[in-house]
Length: 213
Image (cartoon, helix red, strand yellow):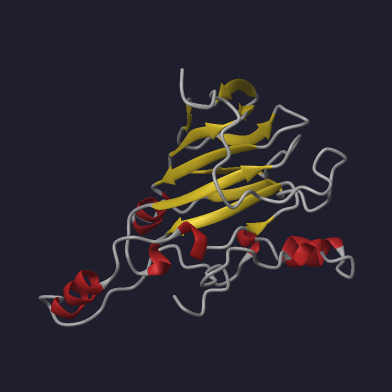
């Protein structure tokens, strides 16, 4: 875990390589998390039949991960902070990450067998699932059902949007339900609306009055 470039102790700002003016479009796409060739979807477990070593290891793993120690990656329109996935040695059946959408941003368009739930923390936007539009705003939960081609959009051209994503991809892949495919890559170019945007390192509440209702 210490060698993971996403995790930076004491700071959460990581260089987003594809923003470099010296890179070609192909190099920018290759630097995206979704383009990784060595991504670990399900981690291996080995040892004696009673798997005591693995159980001991799991009991020794910290149960709390600090967001400030996990860097946002990708951009310049969609940013991701991967809180936990099997490669981190804590979970095996689910993957949790935070998605930050710059003003006017759109995500990659893709499809996979597993389900996913997007809890909308702030902002307003919409999904396109198999050609059907579904609008959402802060407090909603957007459900990506099995085997649908989908894409996420921030409807605002002035404010960002943010969603916490929980998905069971590792479990589905463990069961050999392997089909998943990119239809359209995550944008690697700055749009007029997203120019100069940086992912928020702390929660900023744009949807509720200060002090409550």
